[in-house]
Length: 192
Image 1: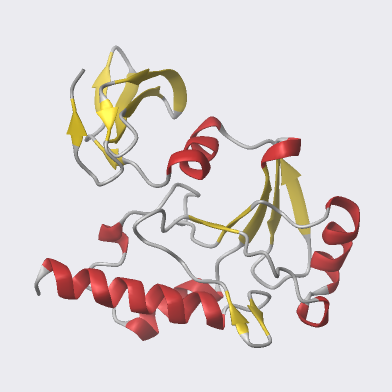
Image 2: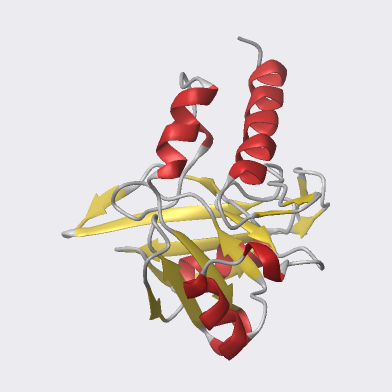
């Protein structure tokens, strides 16, 4: 399958999937995933939420905090971020089935709070936003280097060429973010 066709199918599946998610389809509106930005988070649309389609647990959170800045729709079983390879080889039905059994979250950057809803929308819990989730909200999904084991620690580099940024992570925690050139915004980079 060509890269273009796979990208198109992933985009189509994500848009359809996002619009089909309980609590995410708002009357005529649908939350659209932009895979060029992130497959892990979406920026909350201006119209969100439509009060008629909120679950009671969502209503409670909305009444307390208002609309979130971002929403996280995808999770691996271990809670880590997904990549396009997580969708590779899966048909649309398999993706829908996986999504039906995943938790969702609302992300409040201004309050450093992530509200995680259970897959059945029966309850939620709150946690601080991780450094890695903040990076994804700010810059989108990174290009990732393969993690390496050094002195008992897992190190990994995340790269956003379009922004000219690189983050060094150790054991999932941000160690350093640095400028690596002038980002062009087009997926290429010009060195200083």
